[in-house]
Image 1 (cartoon, rainbow, N blue to C red):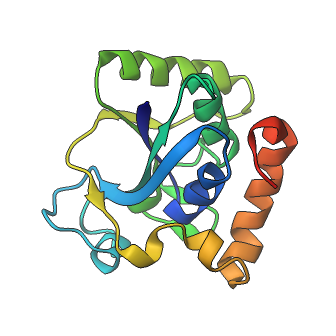
Image 2: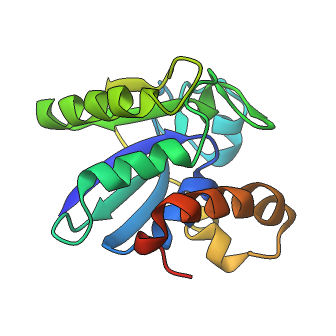
Length: 174
């Protein structure tokens, strides 16, 4: 089992994608990368904590290759916009990959290089050592599955899932 900690805007989007991915065993929404000891949703949304909304994606690499997990990350958001994903603006929505060791760091840097050819503008995804990971409030966990009819899910998440399905249908549940 491996775990990648990734941030690509609102954590609900990445959570929705990876919850549907074959070989993924757990997705935990959370906060990391900031200076506040006990962040919560309201404080992180203020943009004053330095934390990013992220997901910890645990997966079985004998079922799904780590490159597929990372390439799905680059399809699921725009890694060329600094501190912004659509209407979500601020450092809490930055594109970021948090590594746990030198092997993950190299893997993440290779994924950026590999995916750059798919983007006209330079990828600005931050690659940083993983500091403390703070689990988000319970109501954020598996948000899309619990609220598929919610406006944000319909307008923002569904198109991202459709885009990911276009390239990775063999890995995604219906």
